[in-house]
Amino acid sequence: MSEDTTVHAELRENFGKGFARRLRAAGKIPAVLYGHGTDPVHVALPGHQMLLLVRHANALIELDIAGKSQLALVKDVQKDPVNQIIEHIDLVVINKGEKVQVDVPVIVVGESFSGTIVNQDAQSVSLDVEAISIPQHVEVDVEGLEEGARITAGELTLPQGAVLLTDPEVLVIAISVPAAASADETGAEDEAAADASGAADDAATESE
Image (cartoon, rainbow, N blue to C red):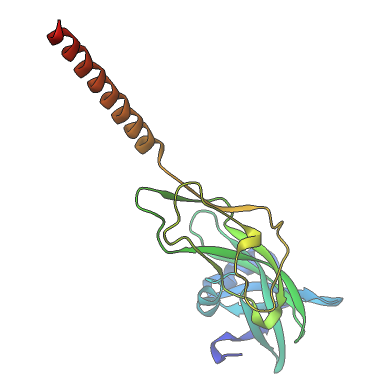
């Protein structure tokens, strides 16, 4: 585990909104660690470091609690809906070699065929993976795909060892042509047909 994921946690015995506000004012974030039948452990985490770590989904960190090391998965990050300040973090105890079920973001790479758009129906997929090998995202390549192309969850390329939990038939990507473009093409075809009809009528009149 890289050094920047080692987080020094302070045990806390005080609770309540007032104490939590004082913690955040001091640059710390209240958090709770639980799982595997253990009693919940309430800690305070360094705010700036956690802000950087939780930018990625399913962050795995190594807690240093009073000199004792413990792997933990960031399960939930609660933020203020207005200013987006982190208010509380839920952590789950992780044992080395353990597998976990996580939702992993799907990232689109490449560009579809000219004039088409990429519709992403599923923003993430659920995977069963080793806790120490959780991917930050799953890529789906749309390079050169034409209108009507579809990619389902079962067609995604997953990291080695990962097992798809999402229904493989779930639609992830659909390639289409914008409605406005379709209307313009239809209008152009109608105009061309009208011009052809007019030309035919003119020719018939001249022959008379």
